[in-house]
Image 1 (cartoon, one colour):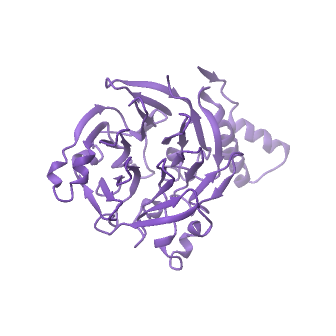
Image 2 (cartoon, one colour):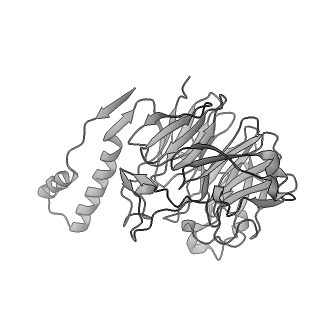
Image 3 (cartoon, helix red, strand yellow):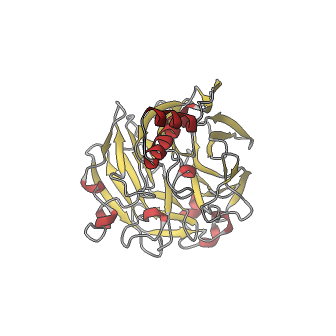
Length: 387
């Protein structure tokens, strides 16, 4: 199923040949080198024929979801740039359309004092279709993953039939504080509750009663939701470091809900331990926080996205090998896909026909860890799950 694609010619040689044809400035030469690297990166190294490209984007993509009728949505977080659009629908020809409309996507950093964060997307981190006619948009409202914008953190429900916002659930500072970063969400099968991971500081879980609109934090600053100090995130065969030498410390990030809605799985990105907790305990945690006792599920590795399929297999996106692994019901972690194009596999989704989707967000190639982008091949892929 896999193949090794021959390595491309040296980028430096390619750029030098270009320079021989006509003189170019140092700045232009750098641009040519970077562009060549962009073009070569997706076709070098290891590729897996099961991983198929669905669409490519000009901006960093994180979340993806597929509705019950096969519509695809993705989001672009406002991290290293002031993106021109936050949530889009991916059309059948691969083009994108702002969703639900241009106005909800009108926020810009430069206009933050002019545009209300209550009814505009500020920094969207994830999108989830509940298979019951709604798209849910998680907005931690923290540009560049820094301080949250006042009145910005929220969950937005969009009616997929009318393509209009149905309801906005704002989060108070007690739930989403100035250093919080709501990361991902899962909606209960009965539509009564939403469960979030908060990868900010302190890490934790958030529970939202979708009927009353009330929310509360769970396991906030608990060891189960914090980055593990002895864990190092590795990419490209070496520890990932910021320019000042710091390694990334991401708290509770990965999240998955069992198909029956009774168990929530979660883990810190900078961590190896996967935990689970009964959702019944989460729902009662406002009155009885002591009832929430996280149970260790497995030792894994640093991961970003989680997904549980109908066979109760847990998919994990693994950054160290640009891959996808599967945790079987017997607790064994098995490699599934490894592909050099899948740089920082981020979020999973599953379509109505069973097809799996995953985004490549290229976090290790971002200005967080370099002077500028080293690879901007932002892509949405799809693959068939194992039988």
